[in-house]
Length: 111
Length: 148
Image 1 (cartoon, chains in turn green, red):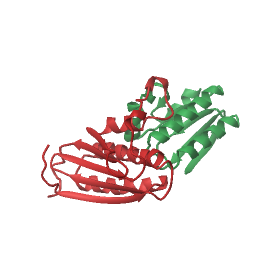
Image 2 (cartoon, chains in turn orange, purple):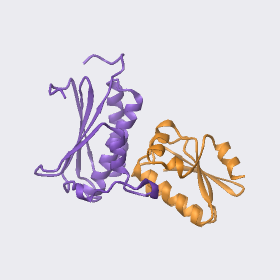
Image 3 (cartoon, each protein chain N blue to C red):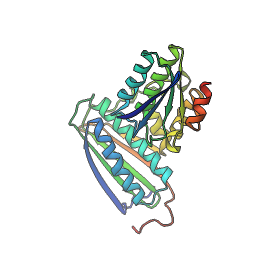
Image 4 (cartoon, each protein chain N blue to C red):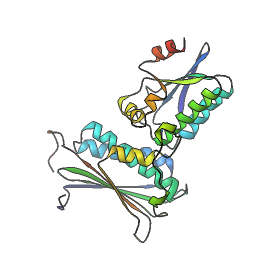
């Protein structure tokens, strides 16, 4: 899967492009957890270019979030399209994950 | 529920590789939009059918590639019906536990999303082979819907 990764100081911005489904969920999880293992645990996940996500994709993000938090960091999620946001709401991830309307808001939230 | 023949029926065949799912979604989206289902209902149906196919790949076929999955969309005046047929291990509802969302699970959310996305979910695992899943969504089609 095409995933843009960009470091901005202590924060790393990760932006997948395309559907996050069963076919790519493991790849997404590995890419995120590898960043954490390399010391980049303060993550922003920009989902603005993701139009579809399934339960495998959500599970991958949850696993990566837990991994980041265990390392003293977190994943702040931003720029969700409405269909993707609906699934976050359905699974109550909006109450668990740090959610932001824009990438700029997510960057500001890291301080 | 009316038992009259649906005015529109479409079929799609795929095999049990995860990289086939995008092709299935593209087909289903085109069909649903073409039948004037409101976009948010199209998205919900896409989620539900995708999750059923995920389960078929993961559980009915245990990840084995090359096994058949057949999808049929039937459009009635008041509802959209999708059948998903596989030839794998029959679905056993005794193995299903609803996810504890408070525990922030990493898996086990598929059927929960299916049930949250459509109005009816049933299955038939008494067939000679595999399982037939039936998903129903009742809806008012857009007023500019194409003629049947």
